[in-house]
Length: 368
Image (cartoon, rainbow, N blue to C red; front, side, top):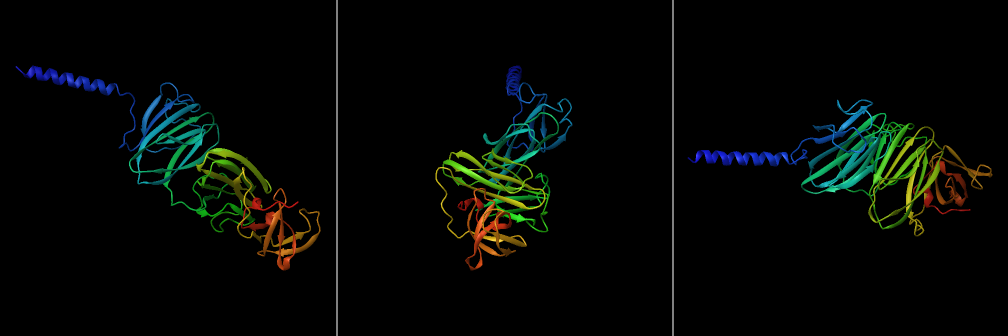
């Protein structure tokens, strides 16, 4: 007589469980989920109901002008991917590439925000991840033309007192780097030489440098001198955009920083001829202190004229040979000419393009 009662109780429990499961809504990523929970919308704002939801193993897409999947637009669509990852405790470097807009959150912290129309561009950010699982969320939209959405991460090496440099044998920072190394400074005047003979081309190459120094709160002025093109990002903000062929030219960018770790990234390309890439910054609230060591330069030209003033109209006082070292006394306001002291204390002006300096050129005092 108890069997029908037991059967009814069991049926009620099953129905309640089914109702709870149906009330949970869309599938969310689980700690053990090996792939991405993906949703696609046929608009650029991730609004309304998605037209497609699925699990994806890799998030490494270059759709060109095609569609991500049947039912999704080729243009003016958006997508969101989320996933938990379980990694050993360490600092990790996240890299995303997008055409057009992209945003990256890790544990609900917005690390990269580049929500705009753009050609395929790569952005990086670093974050320390402790023990346990961490939620990664990527949002993306495609407006018109080609569509690219990629993400990857690697464990960062221990902090260095310098820059993480990546060099590419093309002008677009695309593909795998031909060379990855640590550079103590971005203070290069390669002339017509290669940054790394046998590994990086002398012309038609590009480079990306990044680091995250801890800086006190305040106003800062960033100074960048380049030949040819470069872009400077500070905390994800495009502070200086000089992406064009040009002779050595100096640019300035001012920004207020709230204090703490600052993500600085400089992108650079060299087309042909001479190659210069230099970056420095100083507090805009107080003048920078003088260098604590003697500024020294090395001649990169086969023969370099020493002139009586900062320009080609001034008379030639003598010549310096390649590899000869000089003491750097100062610069003109543009940083294109340097006053130097050579052997036997002879002083004069030389073209800065042909001097490899052990300090940023713009740290030298201006001599009128």
